[in-house]
Image 1 (cartoon, rainbow, N blue to C red):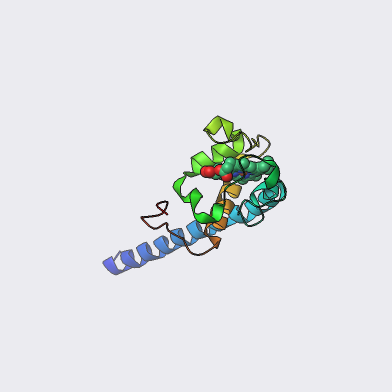
Image 2 (cartoon, rainbow, N blue to C red):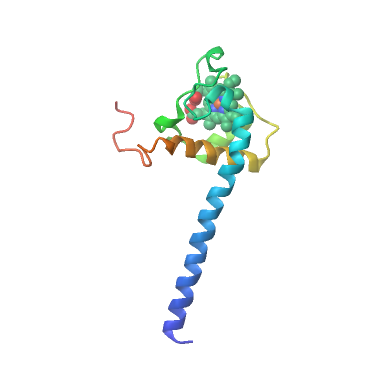
Length: 133
Ligand code: HEC
C-alpha cells in the first residue's frame, strides 16, 4: 500500500469515528427528554431553571441548571444522584431516588439536563472565574 493510500484510509476512518461519536451524543439526550418531562420537569422546570410547579413545595428548591452548576459534576455523580437520590449523595433529601430508571434512561436524562444547562448559550464552557460572582 502506498503512503498516500494509508493516509486516505486513516482520514476516512477518523471521520467515521468522529461522525459516530457525535451521533451517539445526540441519541441519548433526545431519549432523555421524555424521561425528564415525565419525572423531573415538575420540580426542575421544563427548561431546567428549577421552576417546575412542584418546586415551591420542596425545601430547598431545585437549583437553576442553566447557570452551569452541572458543568462541575461528573456524569457518574449525576447518574448516582438520579438513581439513589440526593440524600445518598450529600445533597438535599428533597431530590428523590429513581430506582425504576434503567441505566440507559439515566444516561439519556443526564445528557439531556447537560444540554438544558447549555441551552442558555452563554456558558458552553464555564469561564475560569465562574462561581466567583
Ligand atoms: C420532588 C422534586 C424533584 C424531582 C421530581 C426531581 N428532582 Fe432533582 N433535585 C431536586 C432538589 C430539591 C435537588 C437539590 C437541589 C439541587 O441541586 O438542585 C435536586 C438535585 C438534582 C441534581 C443534582 C444537581 C447538583 O446540584 O449537582 C440532579 C442531577 C437532579 N436533581 C436531576 C433530576 C432528574 C434527572 C430528575 C428526574 C428523573 C429529578 N431530578 C427529579 C428536586 C427534584
